[in-house]
Image (tube, rainbow, N blue to C red; front, side, top):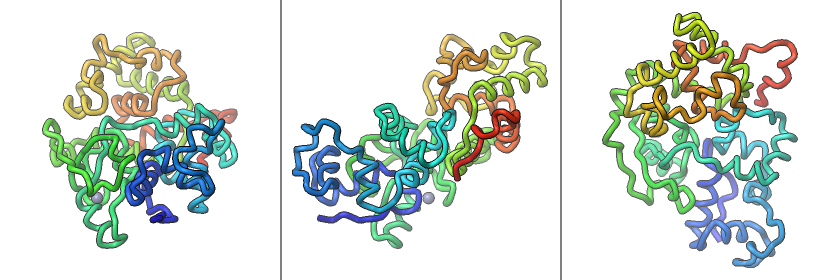
Amino acid sequence: MDMRNRLFPDELLKGFRGHIRFHNNLRDSEDTCAALNHGRKLGEAKFMLRPDSFVKLISNHTGTSIHDLVCRHSVWPFTACMRRVSGAAEIEAYIETPYGRTDLMRKTRQYAWTCIDCQREDLAFWGETFWRRSHQLPGQMWCQKHGTALAKTSLGHIDVGPPDHFDAYFPEEVDAKELQTHSKVTEFASLCADILDGGLTFSPSVCAERIVRQAEKMGLGTNLKECADGILRQVPLVYPKAWLADLDRRYPNIQGGQRGGASTFLEGKNELAGAQLVMLLALAVFETASEALLELRRTDKSDETQAESYV
Ligand SMILES: [Zn+2]
């Protein structure tokens, strides 16, 4: 069996499972887990009462801790940044719960994205290509390392094999070169990357309050309702429409009927608001990623332990 036993830097956990499946001609992810689980025959996994999660199996296989796999090889630190879970032991326990398993698999984009220049370098240096988690962050249209436009392909391909084995194409509706000069898009890209790499966590209610307060300072409204409406009106004004639509097709109309939890979040009534939406709203009122981070992470004394980074 071809079972590479370590992950490459920034390699997506899910893609690593795809790598094992691809190189061993395994039928699906279930059989891949079975192959990782020594002593268990293929096809047996589904009959087990409580099979090990694949993150646990990959942890055993590579000798990398679950905490490191989750924090350095998945987009979970970004998708779950509005969480209350922190610290290695707590994260490890959470990821093993049914909700945690789903949370780890949560998709960040509609497609799988890859950089052709990374592929070329990876083939030369590592001898194979792999899916990078930094390319799967919402709104990223170019590679942070090469500045090259990212190409997209079907999301399911991550589960099937390495990126150079699939046709990928550049989106027609957005021009990555043009977006690279758009300050809000570049700030959003760097904000998401900072959260992913730094393992930063946030409190939804603190975020909502700071965003609304900033809107008030900007004169977008004098009360909560006015400010919330004002922030939503800013969204299609400050971000390019096609880019917003790629993020979520409802966003270009967020100020109209398609609010998708944005108003309730701003009014402090939605503790489950997702990171993508919260950061989009934050940069609708704050100029830069660093300004947004400074404000959203400023905490009262009582909040301090929850805001600690785990890196
Ligand atoms: Zn690249």
